[in-house]
Image (cartoon, rainbow, N blue to C red; front, side):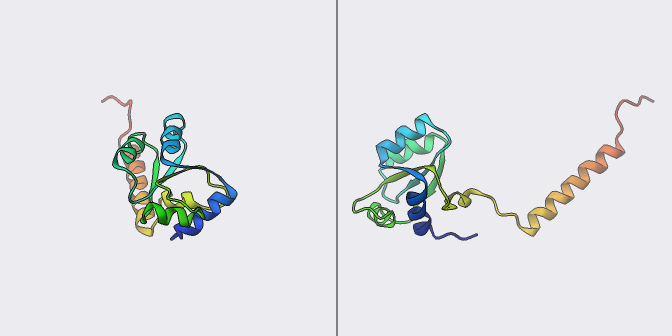
Length: 127
């Protein structure tokens, strides 16, 4: 599912709970691992590294900080934005894996193989 990131960000700010700013985002990911961070393309390297090291979900915003600020309806640069609660924006669907027909066929084949192996090799029988 393709999602318009700018619309999703605006809706997240209106209906969810976000923290704006790179320092606030850094502190939030240190204290709470259940967050998602949106990073602008020109987010400072040191800040980006600290946030990435925290093993939190990251959305790479393709534009610069001023573009992210405009997308969020703010009149200033935003290098990082932390999403605590997405509200009804659906922005976190970016991280949900899409199930393709190939994937479901592969899973069915694996399950079939596991079941047939279990039936063919009975355990606990000594000869």
